[in-house]
Length: 409
Image 1 (cartoon, rainbow, N blue to C red):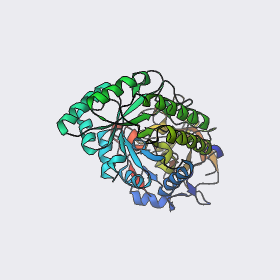
Image 2 (image 1 turned 45 degrees about the vertical axis):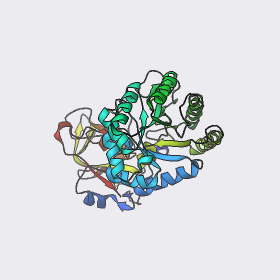
Image 3 (image 1 turned 120 degrees about the vertical axis):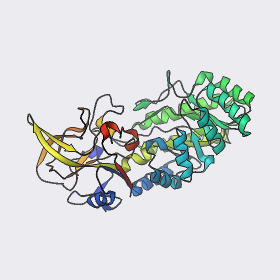
Image 4 (image 1 turned 90 degrees about the vertical axis):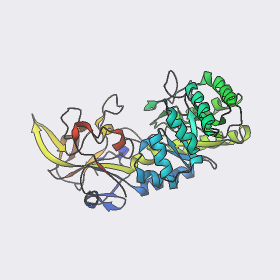
């Protein structure tokens, strides 16, 4: 894997000849197991190692939740439910997967704007914590409670006045579709009291994909300070304080891994203060991409090789229909290449190529003008950092090409 810059070198292992090892198995063997290309493969050992690393970093008593939207592959969710303390879902479909995977309903939380009455009914009947995002949801929950005779468990998702600086996606600060503006939270808390709903706490998620420990720490401190101020208006003691996540992984040249040490120290200080001021509150850190993103690869086969006006194109059997993120069409403002490789070619002639998929659109670009070992038809092209926002975040029905496979190894 000498073609991968040190600053973005993936965690995936390889042999001396460049044959990739996923879960200790050679990639060529996994192709036979998958039965076809393209496919995603997720490495259990890397996920388990990442969770263990976080357990050592987070202060005692802090719960670790998996944000399922990062990767809802059912076998992976089943695996995660045994490793983490809870699952965070963002739809009734995800809720069903989490519960069927064995997640404890008491440790499942349901977020997302625009929840339907049917979804809220499912959540109440399931006994999960509902992160309320509007006054409308409160009114619907009161109606559901009357119909089912169950007091809904609720937390308020707060849209704070601050944002997570330097985050890939900002989910707090300014006008947002997520949560209730912090200045409107006291009114929402009064409504919870009047409606007889079971208040449990707050959910504050300011942003995602951040590689700056100082920015993550600042957002955590601000979130805790805001929760303290809002708790004064609460109808019951705060029992759950979800500080969100925002932990990023390196994708592109120049990016370095997030330093966990300062974050652990910061959360320890917050936890100590929380024990003094909100002694019944359990702190939750909610992570998705950080848990699974670096543990996955996307594999496609080179099906054609062509030269157009001196530019070399490798055409593979999969593209943006399977991996929208790698194509740059899932939130990138300026397109950058994910780390990539040609399997089994650690040395030899190198060339600058563009790797494209089979779709009839110029947007179907998986790597643009990257230097790789010279590839032939039949070789395996690999995209690293592909464990999050891959198959489920891509338009697999686009242009009628077959869906990709997924493996947990």
